[in-house]
Amino acid sequence: MSLLPETLRAQLLAQGRARPADPVPLLRLFHPLGPATWLATELGGDGDTLFGLADLGFGCPELGYFSIGEIGALRLPFGLRIARDLHFTGTHPLSVYAAAARHKGAITQCPDALARAAARLRAARPDDPELPPQGG
Image: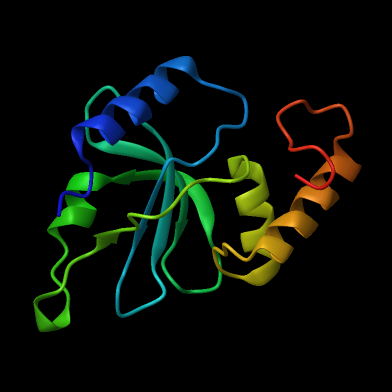
């Protein structure tokens, strides 16, 4: 399985060129035997550098850049490799995932945790059009 099929590559490149203020993640990569998770919102023009939220399982997820080439080259026990979540669809802007991750100490897809993080961000930034509406 390709970590970055052409259609997803094109979407990530386009989102990187558009530079939305608070993009929605388009890609989730994960370690099938451990806690490491990456959410990516854009791909740089070099075709290798992703931007997003990275969580290596140490309790301190952070925003930054990471290499799809390096992640794809990782060799895990039992012949496994880092995998792409085929069913992932970003439901919130990256700031919401980051806020929920800071609160939980790990990237989460828990709808309740994301809704609470979105509510906290809406309260702090009531005029931010990038945040989902109440209940969204």
